[in-house]
Length: 225
Image (cartoon, rainbow, N blue to C red; front, top):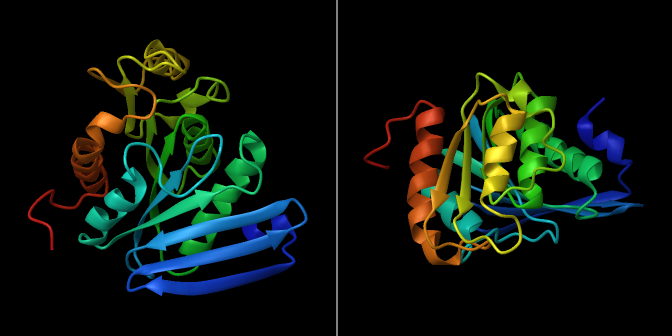
């Protein structure tokens, strides 16, 4: 059984929006799952990007997810941003992200990084736990700790936790809590002066996350294609 069969889809629509940018909408009785794809359709390497508790395609910063996707595409890495059927319902959102990975696997994706902001950090952690054979690294941005209780299961895979120093919603200490849940596994970076949305360091995050992802996938970090 394919993962998307678990959604009991009523219908699916695919559309190419621009060169290298494609959209998928999967209609279900529990809402519409939206997937925005960037990069090579048959890429071996994939980043699945999970938004916060309100869903959406842009991520934190000033459109971090599409900007990061454009950078990674130059290294033949695909990105899919998941707009959940029902944002903030953790189990459903994890399944939504798993469906995205499964669809990409059908086109050739073999190695995956799970990335998530805020609530999406918990989604990314759980995707990593659910797909240990495919997910080779996990990165969280301003993550919550709820839902990350099993984070120890991510070891020894790379686990990067970035958090704004002045996060007004989830204090920076939250990422340290999650690393504690992971039995000390993971690398926490506190971003000076940043709040929950990480709006002041979006460009720097594209570079930081791009280099990290490319390194995890085993690509040379520079120069890009």
